[in-house]
Amino acid sequence: MKPKVLIVGTVPYNRKSTSRAFESYFCEWEKENLAQIFSNTKQPAKGHCRTLYQITDQRLVKKRFNRSLETGVIFNDKDLPPEWEDNSLEVGSSFFSKLYKLGSKKTPLIYLIRKLIWTKKYWCTDKLNLWLDEFKPQCVFLSFSDDFFIPQIAVYIAERYNIPIVSSIGDDYYFDFKFSLSPFYYIYKLKYKKLIRKVFQHKGSAIYIGDKIKDKYNSYFGLDGKTVYLTSTISRKDFKVIDNSYPKIIYCGNIRLGRNTSLNDIGYALGKINPDYMLDIYSNEIDSKYYKIFGKNKNIRYHGSIPYSVVQEEIVSSDIVVIVEGFRKQDVKTTRYSLSTKVADALASGSNIFVYGSIDCGAIEYMKLIKSAAVCIKKEELVSCISHLIENTDYQRKNYDNAVHVTKQHHNLKQSSSIFESVVNSAIEGQG
Image 1 (cartoon, helix red, strand yellow):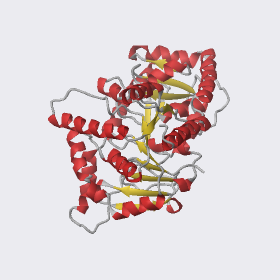
Image 2 (cartoon, rainbow, N blue to C red):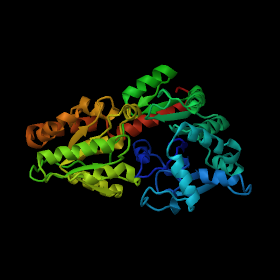
Image 3 (cartoon, helix red, strand yellow):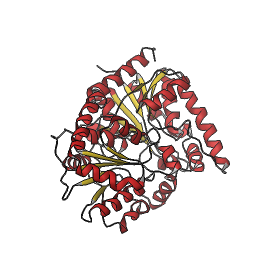
Image 4 (cartoon, rainbow, N blue to C red):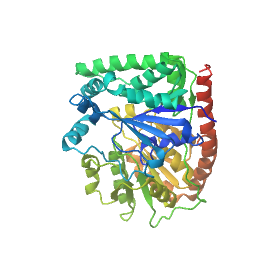
């Protein structure tokens, strides 16, 4: 039997969200030994956890005006739907919908306001503690966040039960710094870094999305964490030459952080190569300001959201899977260490991969290093890079073979889950 792990993160496991990465860690865990506290407003779907505890901003605000209101809601896996239909908020109030939209801007002032909303006495209730006592966690799994409340809850539970914290680190929230004229930014960073130091001072360890961020955090905080590469459940198809008369080219994923601009560049490049070439984009994005850029591009079709099972089918049936990042300085800083599930899915699929973005972004740097895709880092070279991929069958075959090797070496589900389990066990035994 695996140890009892309590996940603390904003989003519960779902195949339509970034929490899909949990599959790489918990795929072999017994459901009765996993639980999660989360803050997302939606009812969770079936996943790895037997029981989940939801605390939302909305209930914490309402608690100020209704002391009898319970801020926590308990969900049991057996009663949950199989999958989210979409990523929309479930708040049941136009007033709170507007507040959540305001909160999504993630300014320093918003972070500080949320810190006040998440005052401990409102979320740390008898109901929560009884739920925790019933589960009896042996380890806290902290899905790193740039908010205050997720690390605060993790520290509270770890101290209450004298158990370790294993932090999952994929973004550089601690070291990330930018010049700002806002005093709120410096207040936020000062308080946030103090909290994160408290997390790492507590016994435990860490897992990382890649070696680059692992080396940085292990060295600075004196940790012995390990890299656990993300994996995919997609079954590889046999090698197939690209249909250069009408290639199926797709992108599935987030279109923020400058990715929409990069996708738009690819669309125009495809039009120059062949007016009939199209880029099909699938994304959960509901804010039109991010996808309206595609409206004037004749070589892009924006489809919106589709279930992850359909995403997998589209990836496998495509000639070319696109991975992009942005070029703006702040976007690059945000994605410097990112290595998303899109990379693992693309490598596992057997489809050709085209990568475009700044070389300083984690995914772009990684894909160039492993030589399993056509990688373009300059806008003016897009047409030639895409044409070379479509026309050169030997190049396609070489990339395919390299992807097979890298998937077995790094993005292996059994290997990743085994490494993660060893980190958890080591932390519990006091060796982390």
